[in-house]
Length: 122
Image (cartoon, rainbow, N blue to C red; front, top):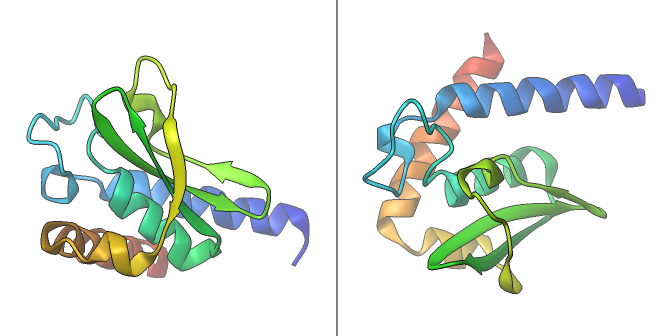
């Protein structure tokens, strides 16, 4: 598959992830349709990793814990827009097992994963 095909696949994946976000996939009780990416970082990073591989990254942004992906040399962060300022402190890799060891995260991940899979299947 050429570069255009891979980019189209990524665009479709990213659109499905964003469409699948809801209050039940967010870790933030202040989630709203107006701020869809809020509280979606860990589960989103896990779903991106399911499809694209790479590493999970974690850092503190102010008082919030934040997750995103490193795929090859490219950072992918579909939820960065939830922060007015993005100044990560203590960037480190995290294993899937570590992120999924939190029962609430595991439940939200399964919801998002299933919605994205259904959306991609058409």
